[in-house]
Length: 180
Ligand code: FES
Image 1 (cartoon, rainbow, N blue to C red):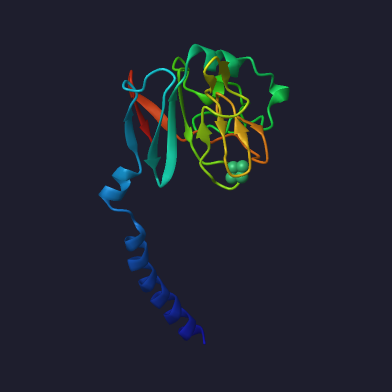
Image 2 (image 1 turned 90 degrees about the vertical axis):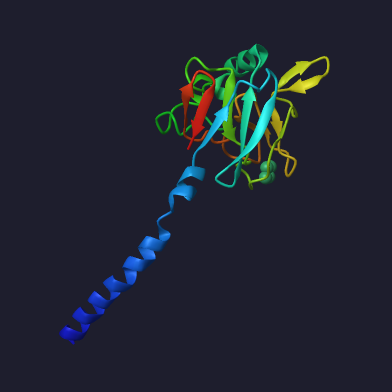
């Protein structure tokens, strides 16, 4: 019985190797895991939606009013007090500063995946943007069940339980970021 067990273990090891090598992504897949985004063409007040790792990635060039509105929010008004930003320490508070990169507060980068059931929130909608004579700008409304997000992508009305997640990214030049 002991010998049989040993043989089985060795055989198992031989089977595992090819599986692992098949699971290793090749260079092309790894390249797609990161995308470079040129922010320069995004006008103030505009948002673009790209695809990153199968998910919609929102990049919005915020106006000063967007930023001021986000900064003015009291922590007690937030439904989710956690930043949900892969670039800051886990559990950091959901201040506007913790949702963006220091010195680049005009650019909001986040996944367009509602934290309720995964629908794509629609921009410039809802009650938590900036009210202008032409309508509300800068906030997001999820069409599925009515969740709303503010100008920093923080959930302000449920049923969504969490802020829209900020993916890992860094600036590779003054106007370019590498996401992933
Ligand atoms: S999926 Fe967004 S509110 Fe339900």
